[in-house]
Amino acid sequence: MDHSLDCAVLITGFNLVTSLLMLTVWLAGRLRIRVARLGQAAILLEQHGDQLERFLSDKAAPDDLKAVLISFSDALADRDVAGTLARTPCWRPANAPEVSEETKSLLEAVEQLRSGRPDLADAFFRAIGSGMGGAFLRWNQAVRDVELMAVRTVADPRNEVAAAAEGARLRSGIRFGLRASAAMA
Image 1 (spheres, rainbow, N blue to C red):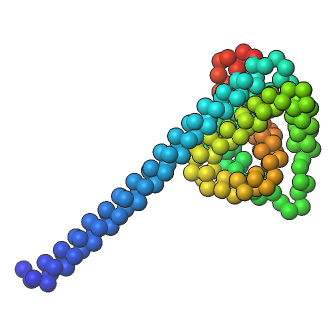
Image 2 (spheres, rainbow, N blue to C red; image 1 turned 45 degrees about the vertical axis):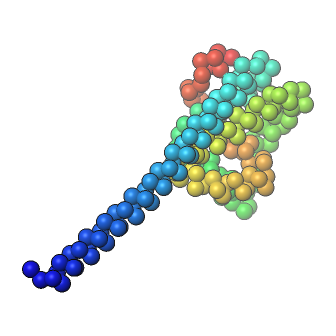
Image 3 (tube, helix red, strand yellow; image 1 turned 90 degrees about the vertical axis):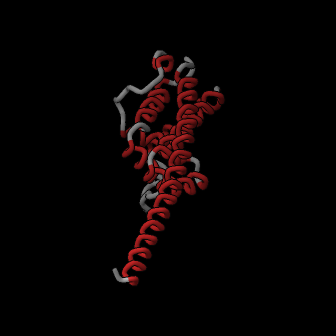
């Protein structure tokens, strides 16, 4: 057998092994990132459940806001809805009204609640924020979309309420996914 052919086979084999090693390292890094995101998603979704239960179990919480949180929470279980929520505040058309009428009425209801029960208003917003964070970290496309959404949210926190209204609208009428104690409220 020709010595130059042996070298070519050896170099080709070495390049193949090197390429496979680099691919393995890259995939392991991506897996570590994915596992970390899912761990954070689990923590945030547990916080969401706690805040949801806190809000729903309080008899002073308005029924209309309870309905929004229930629908919103249910919507978070859907990958497509999470993606829509991640994109909604980011890609609002330039000629769209700054805040919809539905969002305005929701903001007014929460502000009215805040004046009498700031703890419940806080639970409402914490349920929205932790739920959105958990849902976004759960799926790869949503986590990429949320990079844009995060900048917009920092610039205008009303986007969180707009996302809650949109999530409730997307899944209105569906009532499942609640903890037993929250569903009893």
